[in-house]
Length: 159
Image 1 (tube, rainbow, N blue to C red):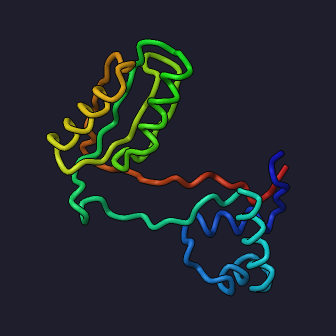
Image 2: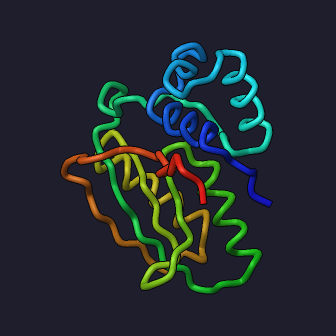
């Protein structure tokens, strides 16, 4: 069952999605609560699984990851054990930033980061050799990043 979120929770979530390092005092000033009330709410939101992680977003080029690729995977068979194996492989691969099981022409869509085309090609060769169920993959290279976010729109007025 989803957690019950009031307007304060929603406003706090909107703020920490933009800046997770913002102090409880500053958040409290913005939403009209004390710092301790904000800390209690943040702890509850983490405990309830509403906030699932607080991470730093790194500029990929600063760590020599110059290439972003969107790969569409098509599998041969939808057998549960084969899909489970593929999902485990995807989850364990650090270069795969995001992965979705989708409808349409593809079965999976992956967002991959790599140093260069050779690095990406080596990753996909490992994927295909470790997962014989992968029928084909199609690659789209991102030419520019217009937006990079995992923020979820949070309406401050529930209901």
